[in-house]
Length: 306
Length: 253
Image: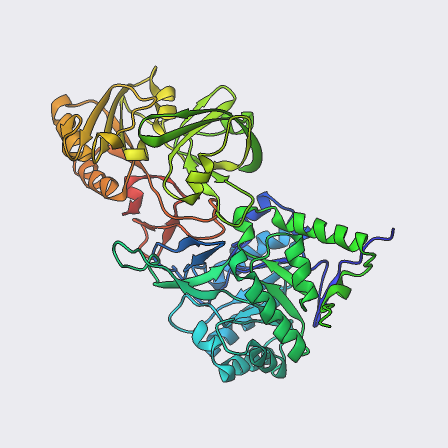
């Protein structure tokens, strides 16, 4: 049996395999590197970086729900300067393929961040977060606005030669319209989906359980929604898709690729099993071997609708 | 920190619906310190999804103990486990109590299930220091004294021991016992820790508190468990990684 070709192309970005770690679920790699070898994964997408450090929301930030969890971290991050001086060197030392996720509250801020990071050779691509549900400015305001998503993509594109991935919000009527807008303005790929807006109340105090009132729902509860969004984009827009949403095991990962994803990101599962990425990659390889698939990329969009 | 599958050796039902699990793990037992914690995966199913954090209750040879009461779906499921079964444990996690510094008397203060980390601390300190243990609860049903020594009890309703809260009882004890170089080790509900922080800062007594916050991962990647830093207004510390035990002066509650 020949070895499975695990590499995947996402626009101009080639990854050694399709298993990525999602932004906001692995920090800047330090902690999870105690559990896994970061050079074996497809890519690590960093915690969203903003121009200035952000403190994030007050507790309670996390709440478990049925087969999922709500989070309202509020983009807590070290800011771009510390990211460059402290975080990138660590990741480079691990030989981890870095995709830098950027969050901002103005177009200018996105551009500034991209400019500051464009010469960092350890960064393989930018993932532009236009869909964080937990901040007042930017975030979902951008993710819900088709023109804005187009404009952000256009301006970022004009300021970097690195591949650009736009991380899309599921909290819209037609996610494929947003994928189309991103493609039109030069995005290399989209990641779908960010979390769904949700909330929960304490029935004794009648207060919301999260300090931010609402949070982003993730975990296995959202997997069917995420799969439907990936499929919608795949059927309507010719752009590489990175599938995210509730992937817990290799079967879930394979399902996302069949539904149209070129690669996948693991999020919530990292909190429960920080070694999940290695297990999922191994499971995918075994699946390919058993099914005589010699290139894993041939799984992408291999759904049979009739 | 590591993820290991460990066998449950023994399960004890203590009073008031408290479960005490003894789990065999040389790796954890030989590396964990009082106040540190374990994040336990209760099932492979999606409900309950997240691990559940438990502070280490005691260590005996190659085994560790943890205790819990059945509050929600996770702990109810955990309570159904039988000796001989294995559990998936991530740990040891966090920073525990510092018992190396200079003090003659340890004052241990536990509120309700906040008594959980102290059997281990008591075991390590009992031949070296004087120990006073103050345990508080709303009523006598909340008072947990397993593995503790030299105990005084406070209950809000006066159903056992001193009528009032455990911090008031501490104030009384401090007035009675005078000038011994003391250090306080505390764990319990946030209002208790708040009152304790005020009292110990007034009286200038070293005080370490074990804090609590909803968390997902337990080792710093989810950023779910912030606690306000006292030194820097613009900074949250993380309960899981920077704590859960802090010097009371390090944080604002």
